[in-house]
Amino acid sequence: VQLQACGGGLAQAGGSLRLSCAVSGRFFSYISMAWFRQAPGKEREFVAGIRWSSGRTAYSDSVKGRFTISREYALNILYLQMNSLKPEDTAVYSCAADFNRAGEIPNMNLKYDYWGQGTLVTVSS
Image (cartoon, rainbow, N blue to C red; front, side, top):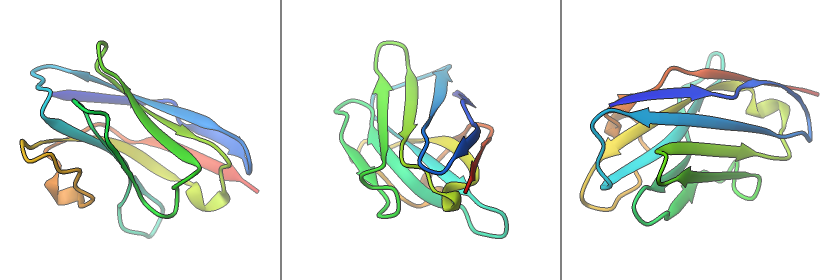
């Protein structure tokens, strides 16, 4: 499984960006996918996750109501729509995939088996 993320860049506070993550290779519907981020000097943190088959989602409290995770089921593309951006959203964002039949959307990065390269999001004040 290969994950390819793109869409990062520079935005002003209050602005919007959309990240995409293309998934290729051996793929099964019983996966959860997620976006994580890592700011300089901080640990990687869970941002949002989605159960691929059902579309069920989960969000961290810090982005709930501002970010939306979604997927294009037929094209195997994961998205993260980021609105009302804040300077504290500045980080490298990475997409990740976890194959699990339990229906979980883990928020721990150790649970995820496959990772895309990060894409930098910078939000200026």
